[in-house]
Image (cartoon, rainbow, N blue to C red; front, top):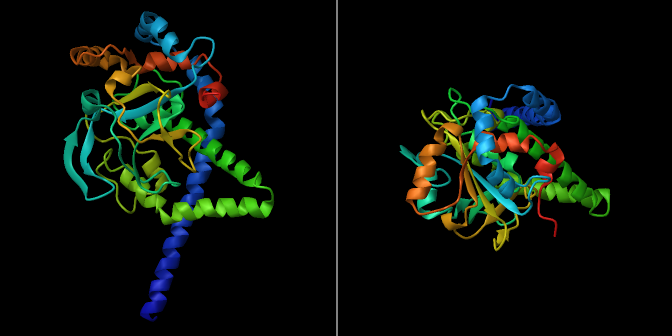
Length: 323
């Protein structure tokens, strides 16, 4: 076998493995998205810890004022993050192996724009990411929650919600493509979107996205394993920051823009509406927020989750501002 033939065979084998991984990942996302309503029903039937019920009663008026009582409040944006990350520049020079404290840094200086290669229509840009739905942001918070210290209660796990949002985004993208006027135009639109993903090397970006969560991500780690990965940093946990969409200049996101938005300016702590952390971290972070001179409430993530369980899935997913 010549070197040229061997290289071609290796490239073909690599593409075949990647294609198989894509099929497995898509099947998983689709299956989980279809199972989400059943999983939410299971969550409703689970016993709710008394400590959570007490926390919800203690914070109910604040939670309803922020997130809505009869319907989900519109015009809110959510940023999911964590307490600890591996330090470094995952999209540039690489990781250092040290640790940093994102929540503490955000409380000190706000949500600052950083290099973000996910906004496909803009290319790599300086921005801060937000979700338009609480449950989507919770996926990004959940990946920081250590498996041996789960939340006291949650309304469906983050991976299932993520699958729902990705499947819905794909469906909306396909409908938009078909609305282009003809099947040929629709396929051209989808092809352009696919080319954007290929040119941006989506798999490589996905791996790099996980570098600050886990230290064992390698080129051999499958797409599905990256998506389902949880932090390996002891003592880590997730948090969700809520802000208002008012006065926020948002950049177009292209594919994925249904549930993700990008802001090009720093969003200071004085603009935060609330910070949600696990129930066992509320006292600690309430003291930190108060010590920094801010007045926004620190709420138990589980109590907000319990509140969200009173609304239908469609409203939780599509509670976006009506213009």
